[in-house]
Amino acid sequence: MSWQHDTMMNPPIEELLNRANSKFRLVTLGAKRARQINSYFGQLGDTAGQLVPPQVASVARKPLSIAFEEIAADKIEAVDIDPEALAAEAQAALDAAAAEAAAASGA
Image (cartoon, rainbow, N blue to C red; front, side):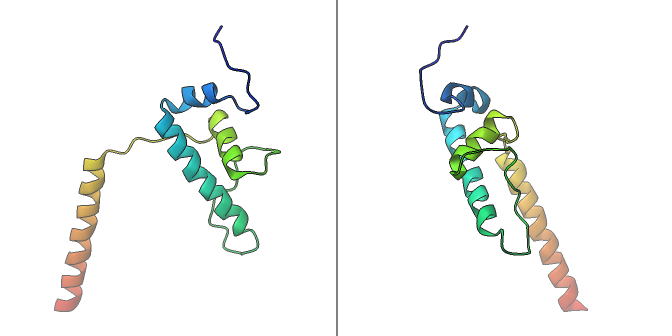
């Protein structure tokens, strides 16, 4: 049985750290998702509806608490991005845009 500190935080920080695998990843993932949730609540009156609503039923009012509950429920997880593949994809998009512009100006 694992030992946990008595804390008022729910879900427990140890559980969140186990899901995120590092403190840095937990902080960045929680902060990014909390900003998305905050933006979602801010745009509720708009008809656009482009943002993803909270993925858990929560009594919490703070976006960060909701984000942590989503992480604990495995609704949100971090994805590793290969910087080389991302750079190659961006370069390919730039090359395609340049080719399109050249074809449009030559026609």
